[in-house]
Image (tube, rainbow, N blue to C red; front, side, top):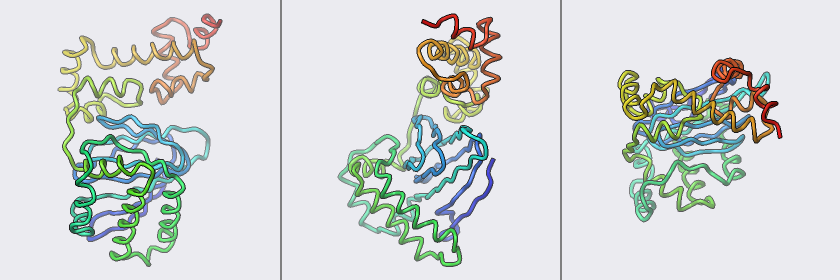
Length: 280
């Protein structure tokens, strides 16, 4: 559930925003003509796209490329809230701010880097703290200040310990990416994504996705994916000490009770009994 949202606009475009959500919650973000810097505070989340399946930790940042993303917040405790800071990186705004500086800076880097999690958490945390003051005093924010904050973020990113990969990522923020249905499905076998969401990541309608899936895997999406999830769950129940709920989350079920019902329907016994029968 989304609890609160504050935005700062630059020439009519949302440039910086803070969103407070209450897990469990899944957000769809479509960044077709922009990159996005994302920072999580309060807990982690899974960031899922056609090419990415990232587990973000508390107070960790990620630089997202053009794509469709699902951000999945799993409920870990009662009264939990998550603060998300998003900074949108529009090509036209970056070109305006840097004129010839940014292209000269990134031309030397190789193209097509993966989505990049930022490792210098302390540096980025200080930057996020500086934004907190302006969210508390929004009347102080204007276009000149927003330009400075974007430049500050870019300068911090290129000075992190991952400078080469971050620069390569900036180079590749706006490139077109293509992935096959099989690649998307294999990447997200254990993600909490619906058939409609997998179809979006595959850039297909739901009906086209189901037809293509049947042709690729000789099975329906629900049968195939649930079978794979339950197979992984049986492995975890046998070799790990994870709770039944954590096993459910690990293999992509957001509802442990549904996982237990499905497991019992397919295996004839509940997960707890399966674990007991296979205890060493």
